[in-house]
Image 1 (tube, rainbow, N blue to C red):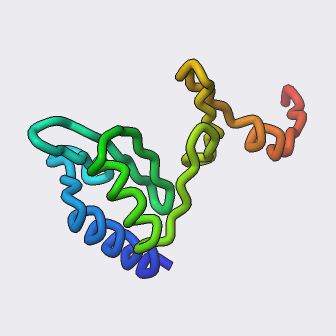
Image 2: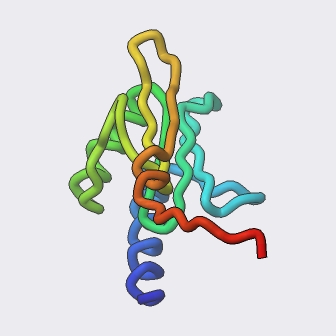
Length: 113
């Protein structure tokens, strides 16, 4: 299974580089898109979860192209990332929670012994 994820990561990284995304020298799971000396976007990845934020033509163009090339789905305002449910409200406030994960947990009562 590791080989499958590694192949996906290599495809993701090659595609991001194609659209001028730059990997952080400190954290390889963090990538930035800089256009004309201005930070347009950041993207973070964990296994097959991606989360990014940004604005600008290069950002929007690269997202559309990567949606086709690496078949990822763009979810704005409500999405999951690493088990967290993330929702952005109309006033740009962000709500996060793991209600589904908590509810899926089997509780066990332990004796004092």
